[in-house]
Length: 50
Image (cartoon, rainbow, N blue to C red; front, side, top):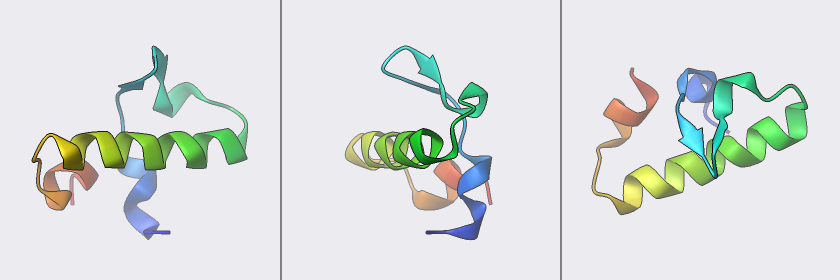
């Protein structure tokens, strides 16, 4: 997992990624958000805000 993944923010399936308390579910939502944004054509740098 990318160390910058905690910088991913936004809504996935109606839930704010940064507000998820359970660590495992947060990791899954990070991946969901990453895949969604990549599928839309966004650059990895913009998604991770690096």
